[in-house]
Amino acid sequence: MNTYIKKSLYILLGALTLTSCKETLEEYNPGGLTAENVYTTPEGFETLVNAAYSYQRWWYGKEEAISISEMGTDLWMSGAGDVYPDLTKYVNLQGTNGALRIEWQALYGGVNVCNAGLKRIDNANLTTALRPIREAELRFLRAFYLWHIVETWGGVHLSLEETFGIVTVANKTPVETFYNQIISDLEFAVKNLPPSSTDFGRVTKPAAQSFLARVYLFNGKNAEANNNARAVINGNYGFQLLPNFADLWKMSNLKNKEVVYTVNYSSNLALNDVTNEISNPYGHSRGSNSAHMLFTMKYDTETGMTRDIVNGRPFNRYMPTRFLLDLYSDNDARYEGSFQEVWYANNTDVLKRRPNQKVGDTAILATRKVITNASARNYQVYDRNFIYNTNGTVKDQLRYPSLSKFLDPTRPSFNEAQSARDAFVIRFAELYLIAAEAQLKLGRADSAAYYINFVRSRAAKPGKVAEMQISAPDVTLDFILDERAREFAGEQIRWYDLKRTGKLLERVQKYNPDVAPNIQPYHTVRPIPRTQLDAVTNKNEFTQNQGYQ
Image (cartoon, rainbow, N blue to C red; front, top):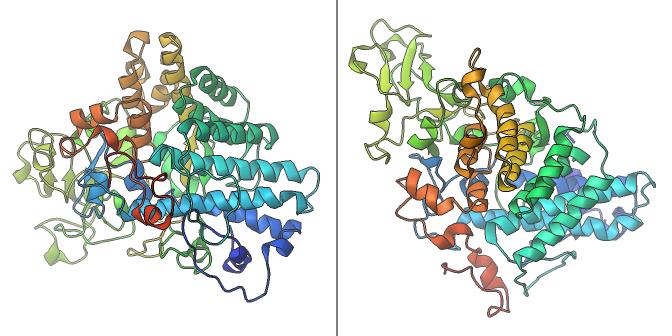
């Protein structure tokens, strides 16, 4: 799976319609191949399964999906380069938003490929041993895409059948029905997937069970969430919390023992499908992981600095709220493991450096702290009072501590937009925090503290483990949300965490003053893309989500 699917294999999907509720592009099939004759061979069917996996790349590591899943929360404000302010700040957010349109198309495309595979699997001539595994993969992936759909848009269109041609009738399906199907698919996957795989990126039993634990938590089934999370924690699968949080993000260490499930990208950037008329019909650079560019401040115009590979290509789309920066205590190694505050002079032109400043000296300090006598230092200081106003609103959108988790110093050039970084979907740490939240909701705060302390012990700086420990009275839902913020900042889950806990409005209004004036109760679901509403003929039944036009 590291190479995923080459362009020639995607041509085999020409017979499949890749979206629901929307007319698709007509596709030329030069070999005259159709789904009916290709997918009757194990080799042909494998291309379909691989294609079903590939649609995860539309979401994980993508600007559109990060804007949906992380922005508009208590953790992030808009940097100067934000291109979706309607989405990220709820400024007249409507169904015309381009990010929502792209992700709607892609997620429904993934569902339809899964439906196509499930329909054809009995005629694929798979071995008795392989058939249930491939069905389990397809059902996991269908559940995976459906979960993202229902949590983003609520009770919208649900189809469990492959669609062909132009679909003009859509249904509004209750959220409960979505979840019943999602859970059914995941339970099948847990029962039929192997415990491990040498093919990195394929779903395994513990990955399916971990996602099922998350789904149960979102569905309010806390006992089931707890049981599934603990089954993975205690399941002897070989997962562990890495001793050093910062080691998680090293490009040389992406296949580490904390990763339960990942969306993988190829180190051969040509295989990441940047442009492909068959597999990528929406005009979107699906292939690259672009997260490395999005959280980085504008460092390359500062004295002593020039753009380089190590510090990244600075799109400065997103910047942290002051609240997020203050969540980390001085005993917590996750701050240094997550954020960059110092940039070292790299400009070899002495005329573009400060007097007596050498290459390798500090050039910029952008910090969450207050710095006194900043002007006396031989480098530029941007402290909390420069970055934020006294009420926490943004004063400077260009310079700020930058999330460094996703930087990729292995890119071939400093302007390379693509990254081969895999996108972690579920880390072992999440299982502990799922169990903790479930235990709290079941009235067992002492057990919740027990699981949280596993995560906090790993996060502690050397010699500070005792200071990082908590006890039962410390555990509240807000504390767990704070802990999830410290652990998972930027990892495409925050908006959903706040929605799940009923805390989206409360915490945005309290901790994100740039966004607080705009957020409304109906923003707990996103608007259905206008293109979808325009395409259906049953407009009286398939209507826009409440609050949107």
